[in-house]
Structures are given as structure tokens and as C-alpha cells.
Image 1: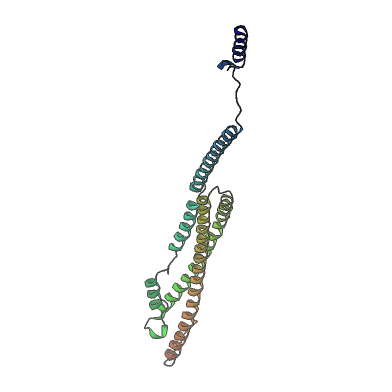
Image 2: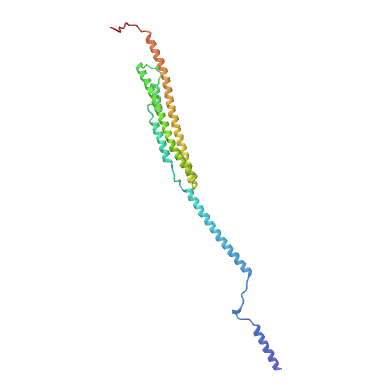
Length: 245
């Protein structure tokens, strides 16, 4: 009986030893799918944030580039040539001969040289001198008008060159500032051409007005001289003149 107990006890011990826990070095790794999915989502979100930051930096860099282009000045300027053209026209107008573009000078001339001959007590010699002066005024005014026209025509070549360069610069502008500067210079060119046209009209009008004034004064002087001749001829006494010996 005791022997049987010993055999059973030994068998139980053997079974316990056989099914007992194994050492830690022999344990198997456990795969958790939920934890793995969570880690993948976290990595994807981090990568998306990095991509968003990269796109934001690229947009900021492009914005700075655009700002630099918008602030870039136009490398071409026609203002100097336009100012020189206007200065030539202004100098030519200021060189008008005899009766220039001056109100006081005009009033003084029309109160003396172009005054009515019938209302003055000038001698015939003085009337002839005034007629000569009026003719010279009309002549030089025509010369001034032709000089102004020649100057404006000469400016056309310069204006054409400047306009072509400005249009090219405007079309190739890299930013808003360059386009605006090109547009402003085109407006300045148009203003200069308008100033030339005004100068031509003024010079031509001056010549026509002086010529018309000359004709009017000549007609008035002719009537006055005829009146004087008829008045003086009423008391004319014939005299004997010996022409041949």
C-alpha cells in the first residue's frame, strides 16, 4: 500500500514538472493588430503634417518672389528723351521773333503799328514805316511756324523709338510696378506729343493772325492815304515846269 502511494506521488510530480511554466527566454511574441493600426495612422498623420508644412513654405517662397517682382523697377526710362523734346519745343517758342507770345507786347504792337491810320496823326512816312514793320512781322511769324513744324517732325522719330521700347518693356514686365511704370511713361509720351501739337497750332495761328492783321491794317492805311491824297489834291495849283532847255 505504501509502495502504491509512492508511485502515484512520483507520477504527479512528473506531470507537474512537465506542464509547468517555461523560462522567460522561451516565451513567444504576441501581435496586436489594433496597436499596429494606431501606429500606422499616427505615422500617416505626421507625414501629412510635414507635407503641409513643405507646401506652406513653398507658397511663402513664391509669395516673396512675386513681391520682389512687383517691386522691381523698370530697367528702361524714356523720361530724359521726352524732357529734351519738350525743352526743344519750349525753347523754339521762346525764340519767336518780333511779336512773341506776350500779352503786353501784343497790346503795345496793336496800339501802335497796327493802329487805325485814320485815327492817328502820323505822317505818310511813318505810315509807310508801319506797313514795312507789319510785313516783316508776318514774314518772320511764318518762318517761326515752319521752324516749329520742323522741330515737331524731328521729334516724331524719337517718339516712335521711345514708344516701341516702352511697349516692349510693358509687355515684358515681370511685375505690377514695372507695368505701371511703363504705362506712366507711355502717358508722358502722349503728353509730350500733345505739347508738340499745341506748339504747332500756336505757331501756325500766330502766323495766320499776323498776316490777317497786316491785310486789315494795309486796307485801312490805303483808305487813309487815298483820303489824304484827295484832300490835299483839292488845293493843288498847276505850275509851269520846264523840262528841256
